[in-house]
Image 1 (cartoon, rainbow over the protein chains, first blue to last red):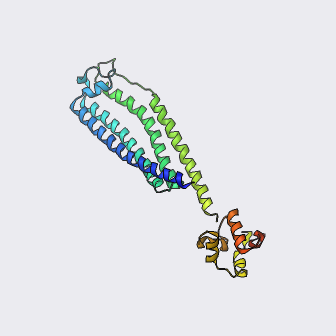
Image 2: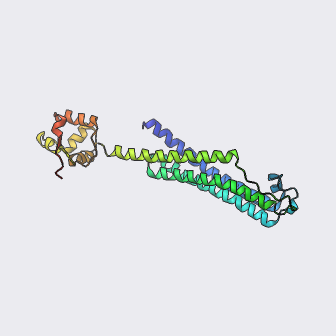
Length: 181
Length: 70
C-alpha cells in the first residue's frame, strides 16, 4: 500500500470518526426531542401514522410509551452500529487497516444493520398495532410490510459483511507478508 | 524445515557482521537474525539479490535443501 493511499485512508477515517460522533449526538437528541413531543402532544403520532390514528384521544399512554420504547430500541441499534464503525475508524485512523480487529468491528456493524433492518419491519407492525388498539372494532390494524429502505439496509449489511470477510483475508495476507524478509 | 539457511556460514566466510549486512541491504538487524535462524516463511527475491550482491555469492550458497528425516 502506498504512503499516499495510507495517508488518505487515515484522514478519511478521522473525518468519518468525527462524523460518527456528531451522528450519535444527533440521533440521541432527535430521539429525546421526539420523546418529549410525543409525551406532550399525541398529535405527533397521529401525524406520523395518519392512516392508523384518526382520533388522537384513542391513543392511550401505554400505547404511546410502547411506541416510544420501540423507537428507542431502533435508535439504540443505530447507535450500536455507529459505535462499531467508530471503533473501526479509530483503528484505520491509526493505520491498522488490514487487521482482524478492524474486520471484527466491521462485521459487528454489518450484523447490527441486518438486525436493524429486520427489527424495523417488526417495530412498524407492532407500533401500528398498539396505536390502533384504541380504534373502534373493525378499524384496528396489523400491517406487515417491507419497505425499500429496509431492503437497502439488508443489502448494506450484506456489503458490510462482505467487506469484513475481505478484511480478514487481507489481514491474513498482511501477516504472511510480514513473515517474509 | 527442509530448507536450511546458510547465511551465518557465508557471513563468517566474508568476515562480516549481521549489523553490517543489515545496513548494506537495508533491512533491520532483527530480520537478518530471523533469516539466519531460519525463522522466516520466505525470502523476497530482491532481498536475496541484495544479500548475494553484498556477500558476492550465489543463492545456492545461502540456501540448502536437506530432506526431512521422518
